[in-house]
Amino acid sequence: MPDASIIALAGASGDLGGRIAKALVERGASVLALVRPGLEADEGRRIESTGATLVEADPADLTAMAQACTGATCVVSALNGVRSVMIDRQTVLLEAAVRAGVPRFIPSDYSADFTKTRPGDNRNFDLRREFMALADRAPIKVTSILNGAFMDMLGAEMPIIRPTIHRVLYWHDADQPLDFTTKDDAAAYVAAAAMDEATPRILRIAGDVVSARDIAAVMTDVTGERYQTLWAGSIGMLGAMIAATKIIVPSSDAAFPPWQGMQYMRDQFSGRGKLEPLDNERYSKLQWTTVAGLMKTRE
Image (tube, rainbow, N blue to C red; front, top):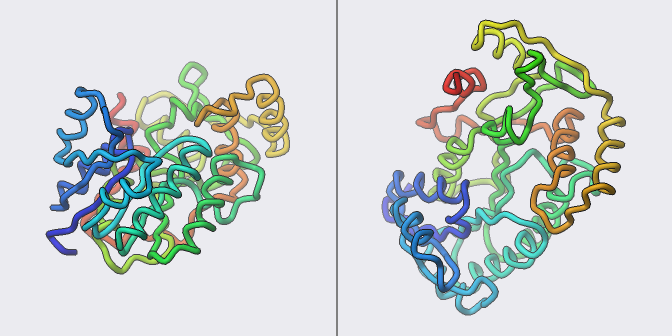
């Protein structure tokens, strides 16, 4: 891994993007944070605090973006949004990397294995699948990093842990293995991959693989109070809930409307988005956070 790696990063102002910027700097990379012209001073200082250098470029201007990417060894996308971002803006970023002669590109995939899920079941996965087809036609080496669900969301955005009733919700099967990775662990892996010239098309990682039954055991051990699993319904029932929620709360322009999180859970509990084989051992010095380890920090 060259010490002089120059990584252009889009999305450094976001939660995951900021963590990736910090992880890249810690590995010795020079990070060019691609930001919109006129960025607010506080936001700029926050990005610079990671050690990244701000490079202004209009994200819709291919020429400007290509100039901003010039000299980079890899372009990393941590963009997040709906079609206008994941397809339109990310396509400009991809084409800019090609025009600038950047050898490698890491798209903003960071999810369960959408290559195995059913088209139409998950809007965000469909966008990633569509962009993958575009990226595979581009004359640049592309590597997708898939990390399952972000472990940080357990108990919050993914409220399957119900402390008030000491239950862990599940659909279909309490023993279905679920893939989780913390944002920090995912960011560290992305940084390592960005500085690795020999990455394959897809890298799959999971900081921990646990079932709802395993999570109940973890919560029992961490809290000292007995947790049990609670069947919330079948996969078909979850699908019906998603359809009803989309009617009540369409939120088509929101990145994570209520039904979107439910779509993620359907792909996890159905097993269709399961990551295998895992590539955790590719970078041996990385440390992985387990669900038990995370829950202990919350006590």
